[in-house]
Length: 398
Image 1 (cartoon, helix red, strand yellow):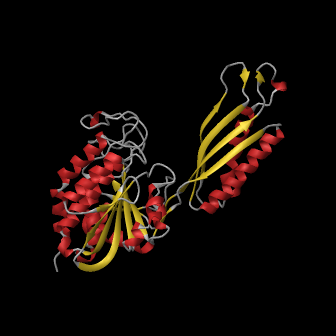
Image 2 (cartoon, one colour):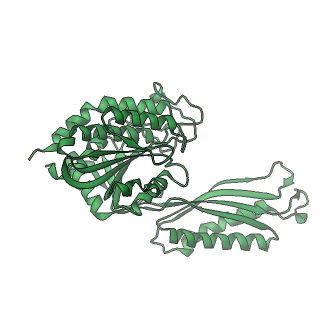
Image 3 (cartoon, one colour):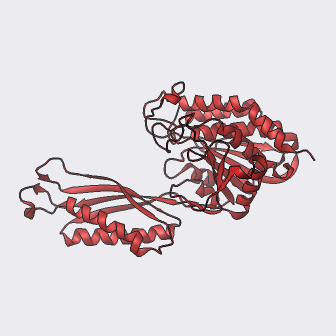
């Protein structure tokens, strides 16, 4: 039996420069969620060059298929393609920094796209030996509700192609190139956004007794929120409430009529998030009504939790041990509180999501996601593309 490990690794080396070129092109030309029109055209063009036809179930993004010549499962591989609505910085990116104001690939989606295009080239070269069918998902709008993953899943295209398993990755600056991090079960949290308007009665700062101060009410609400996690939930269950912004007032000597707050809730089930919502509203209601004010409260459910299937995660780990070596596979003990719309796929298809190491001092790529200086060490492509291809050929890797 042919051992495909060496073949795949050589192919990853062969396509390394191509993946770098793709990533840098996309990095210079970012497009935000649901606006990835040029990005989609570019991806479809690159896939067509290697004989992979694509379908476009949504306005942006696309899905391609590589049909193997041997029997095997139908496996989907996913990359997200959208950029963030922000500006970027960083001398390490001087040759390919974003040329578009208010849009930047400061989360690594350009690299995810380049990596999957590299894997597609490897798999296409090995098509005659490929078992089963590979469905390539280039997904829009991971960064924006309702989430491109949900819309792709609801389009029916994955069901049409008979997808049985799905895998995805995210660049991670906390690990070095050549490393991956995996975990079965709870991997990333569900996400919720909330908006609160605390309504009082404005007036002169020198006569507070004639007002209903929304700033005082908002302060009390924020303080009481800290008890929701510690006194409502089982202490072994991780969850977070964060007020990310508070806005009120316009002058030193004015008590405003209202205060506004926005923030996020993170948990590992929507049931827990809804329990948190209930307690939050009870706190908001009692605080504002007790002071003679009122409120408006919106609780916007976002992405479900990323829960990695045990069997798929074991399959991923086994492929990684074979391709990379045991010392390069980091098994995480704890989940993280960031969210990912990959979870929408997992509600219907068993799958696993993992982190691909991309942090190094040489590339100035240890900055966190969404930081204006976020960057990747492009050597990560040698690992990511090979592992995605290796997942498909796992039974033929020694």
